[in-house]
Image (cartoon, rainbow over all chains, first blue to last red; front, side, top):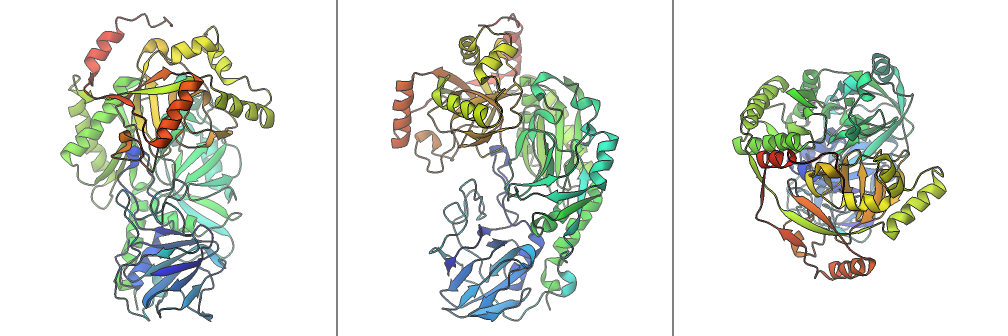
Length: 322
Length: 290
């Protein structure tokens, strides 16, 4: 049991891969954005890689242990201290009942993950414990954690002093410039040759108007093929309008002239085209970047993106622990 | 148009989108829904979920179980088996939704938009009436409420219906707001492209708006009987018929919904078949209006 002293900035319980299976009812998956760091935190404390843990965004929470437990922090460095003593990330740590874990702002990266042996034991809603904060469902009473709440933890046995091998950890950039993988499609044929080249050669800036539903990008104008102009009226009048269709997770959704990367709490359908999609293997980069930082997109084939996701999943395992 | 062959497009490493055509057409949605049912029935290996939309379907798959190329081949086979049965029937509930047309809340949202964002914006009911060649807002109300709407998909937000008119004489088109509205009240009914939707919660929006229902379509507290199984009211392949109510009736129904006592009229015995729908449509003068 963990008592919330300070909640941090929209800190939420997430599990991985989240609330899958209800896209046709309009439910996003939710879940941790940087699923690489998240899964390693769980592996450190002996949980299944997808067990429910905390996602801390930009400013972490302060939590008091109501009983002894083993925890691990991964992802962004939020300068965590246990009863005032700095604690390392990427390592399992034993806490005693009554001790306080204090996290502050993210020095490197944007999102930190806290896993606790046993995993959080909040109510399962539509197959998952993940929080869809804006939608008011999952997690703790549908929302991010609040001061005064006690977060339920299932019984578990963790071992302190286990470390993730440095070679198995994601490496966060320190110069604010990320190279992010994309796959072409589903609607790349709506963008003309010049527009496609412009997309791949631009350093797109992540807007502060971004949240767990969408990452807005700032950059140059888009140009279109004939298809965007010659279409039946039910598509809508903007070149980027299409007959309402389903949006894949990671889609680079073109809202008029504003590209929005649809991330974990995404609206899963609507009337704009998706010329590109960010694949699973690049989500940790989205999760660890801050507004003002830039993305340079690198096009991968679907098969290469699948292979890269497989490589990351293989790293989220016992073999990465020393 | 309806494509001779469905088009497959990847959406990253674990989604693919199938386009059956590029218009609002019950036949296209039947294909998407039919494929969804076939996938569930045949338990296609590696398919996580499918979300049918108006004329397309989004498929989530596990690339560790099935590759993109193999999945396309498998889905093509399934689509062919579905398309061959043109007398497929889908269960379809009919839900009577009370709606106040030309309601004060839409007026307020439009006023706000004109004042703060776009002073040149023509008021939504007048604008939609004009561009569709109707006499006035009153005729828009008659035409818009004169048909049953087919719930082709839920999406954007949990339980939000994307609907199309079943009576071709009630087809309307409307561009979306540009830039979008920053505020729309829960229950507002509006149109964008050829689709009609109901706003599940307060929020921004892009549809042209001209009506509002007092009945929730999304309720996490699941207060009404109709929400017994899920926090959302509507399901794909439902039909919605808007029933005009006065302000007094609106307020009374809203109160009953808050108390949890309102009983929606939901008709549950009907099936829709493409064959009988086509036969009916062929008897109509498609250029007629109400």
